[in-house]
Length: 346
Image (cartoon, rainbow, N blue to C red; front, top):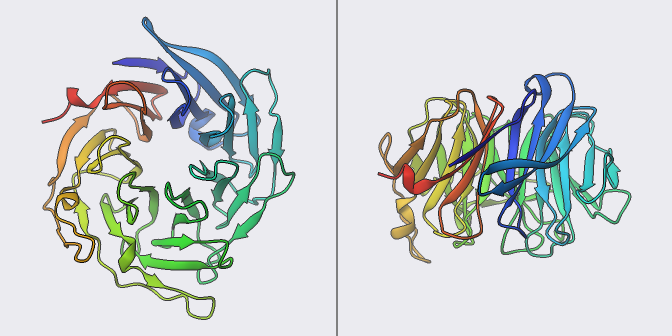
């Protein structure tokens, strides 16, 4: 277990480097992101603890960050002023590229794991934009036409399909997008009965499985094969049911992340000041032709609770490297924790 204090800055996101087992990026904001500067930390894991190898200050708060999949020293950040900045950690002070097309806070950034030369961002302006680090303008813009005023809290590329993007919004919809088809969602589901969806993640072993988390305190697991097809003329509302529901958090679930080592393990971060490890038991019951519908009781599937944070826990990630089960979390208590899930498993 290791810890690092982001003194004067409240954490919003943390991510392991896809190239180095001892390096993390952390996006943070002063004054809880309400007003003030932001800071991007590059953290190193050493035998004596976590050290700040470098940091970059920004004029507005940072809400997310994503490591480049093609350049081991570059990180893209999502900023409260609507801008997106690309930093090279071998250089000092300033970003190597900056874009500003979103009109409100940029809340998520996600790098394409398949094609690797593009990344996407989502914003409170409702838009999803696709970017290339070598182009001065966005490549494409996606917007839900049935809910133009909704905030898009997160957008994420499929780890299996280079053009497939999933998004979640304040209008309680989980949507799928494929820019090759058009700028409208290809599938959608009314996922959390009107509650805002704050986070989503693709399962790393089951191509059709996505998890969503919401202010309704639940995590839901979805099989995309049962989502409605949509079109520009008919943005249908799906009546699909989740294949699993996970209950146990006491407040909104701010961030979720599937394990890169096991298809059934999921990590969550919540406003109840805890991070939790879950086992999706539907993974053991599904078949390709007849996915089972299993609804777990309150607390069902919960494997462990990490309660060392003293404020909202808003970011989490799994290490790709070394022994399976190392994770990191970040919270508004100005703390980054790196810990092993077996210390909390029950």
